[in-house]
Length: 170
Length: 424
Image 1 (cartoon, chains in turn orange, blue):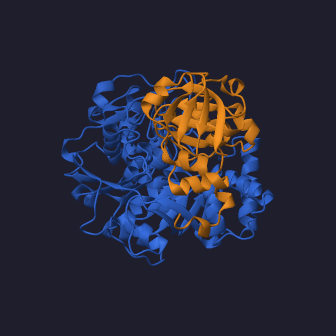
Image 2: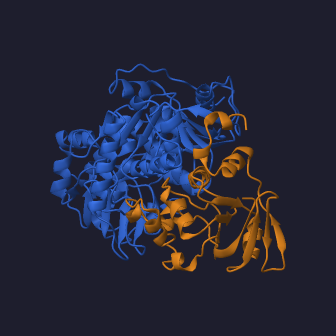
Image 3: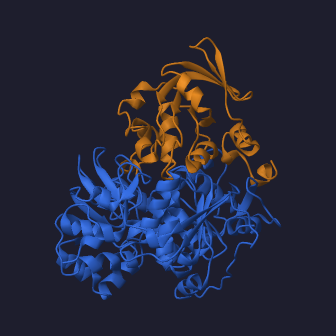
């Protein structure tokens, strides 16, 4: 999984919290497909209908702040989202996304978020830490490289596939 | 090293660690509840299908489980989740399962300190973001998601990036009618909801030396709202006596080094502080109560791990005694032990006589799940910790976060009120 290609859904605002990503009333639900129907319901009730498999979400700073609910990356991943592009992520959301192997948190500059438009087709080049905007004439943007440990977990497809001894001193 | 660095170094079997190091920490305690528990069980089932089967929990005596978010069972799905959780704890020999309606139970974070389930110097992980609360006991306490908790159940280890520590030195003495809740709201208002992201927020200073354990717990509880990995307070004689009243298990108080490095040191003079609220829709959207004085409310809520400890109830009762509430007011002690103390101290009578409903410990309304959610355009003032859109119910409802004193004063007048103005 060195490259992903998909369409961007842009909700460019800061502090999109887990109560918005998947409201508290759905926390009792553990069926992943059912959770997907309610993804981003607090911001756009039509969200799950708009997303196709392999698409990306583009948001503002501190994406996923709030609760530790793993329902948040689960709902987004099962709605089809494969990566979230944002200037920064809240810590529990970030590690849930990576350790659960659900989706990629891609950190970029604020300016990159401003330039990419809703509906743009993007290539996420993980190996070279780049985004390429197919819609805007193959314009390229840098992404923040994953720290070694995070890259290792992403490569393995989540923590499940790694024993502690495979991760110590990465 | 700071206290957090020392704890993580010890847990990782290293002589020293520095911020930015990634360590595998041995976990001393693990908690999950009726939301994260079934989520973790689902992950474990998925992992089993993929060849990673959990035959035994790494150490069943280090695990404890609560029923708090959807109790009393909100509906058939919630009831089924609790059955799933109970079957799991039975199968894996987890003895500490605090069950709703069976003696002591309550909100997970409240039980962590009420029952002294976590001790100074320990690494404690919980399947809930407000796990940070327990850092007030001098432990490293951090929230994790389902997959990470499942990993700890397998291996007893989890990775952490050692956080930088921001030190908040609190000076002076809290004026009457100002509480720890006002202090932490003020801090979050200053540093923002991302101000502590990935970091440790530590509290010290002579105001902390004088502060009760329950008030300290309010500070660390809401470090989550600034994005912090953990909140922590060095243990002292107050910590020791609090814990010794609750456990006979011996413990050692670990402290940070004198020459520890802090990313930043913020000083706060508490003598000058006024009661504060966080307006919708962010815990960082703070202002003095006086600035929103008179905003009409539909509901006052005294509950949650943040604002329904015994001292929170005592504070609210001081204002509610002999008075009547003007809007619907709910008081939900955070644990059964607190409920019992409130009953014996006469606080429950005060609340009921004032016209409040006193309910069972639950997270229900705080997270908009059940047991009194808000309707469209309703306005609530609450002792809880979050006020994001839709947090306590309808997406068009609004929540103001405040101390138990501000909430009680507002309940009495039916609009947002400075507790210093309740005199007659």
